[in-house]
Length: 357
Image (cartoon, rainbow, N blue to C red):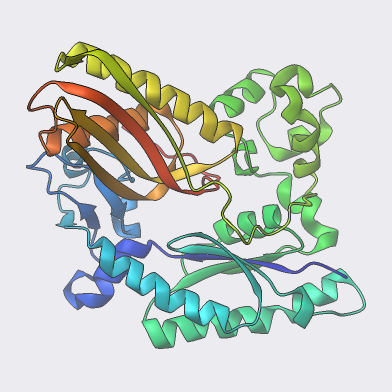
């Protein structure tokens, strides 16, 4: 049986919800996060604000300098989660097998309802279903979504990134190799900033370069080499994962002596962020939520977290958000017995790596 996969991605979800709820914000550069005059970070940005270089996890002060006319709106996470619940109910009514990736993203396997003589015909039969799904979300929730259609997860994700917002792209089997050729290597699942740099140093800049590379990619990217070559030709046999096996990644340290020494705590947090980043990259995942945990000498334990719309993978970004949480809520008001850092709401990182400042 042919596989027909949708990748559904809501467009600038947090900011779009704010623009829908407040018509005065429509068409404006909306930045969801703390105002630039306060210590804070960007949780999400509308497409109008992204044109100025504003991105998730960026300090609000930086976003304010890049986009002086940006309209800052406090995040309403409970509201976004409730909106996501309504959208996923619409998705579930398609009868597809669904893998929910995050609050605003999902894979749908609709193979059972679109079978034809060959895979290309099956993919084209799926187009009306995708249009109906987009129209239902627009009419019932007043929000736009982008859908990519292909024979596997890799291609469906690339297709959904191809035309945003409010896009619909099909990558047919006979055109997948040529479709991929001109794209930058970073669109391939599992290629992060470090891998992109390594490949670039070997003269591999586009997916076409990967397709044409005659050497052994294992010499450049280790055991990922053979899989990377398959991905470059649009081959991907990963199934939809219905159960979230990995929900979070974290680390913590109990100090031999309670401490509020900033240098010690920063070094601890930086080491934890590096370890978490390495584990995320090993699993080829990004995180939407960062959490810190502190325990005092009387064993009182507190946790604080922040969510951003675009998934992060880099240690510097995880570390920055951890430091922000400690400072925002004044958690180091007395010596700490334990300090922990973790990430959750895990999903595949975007093909376009975050341009964090």
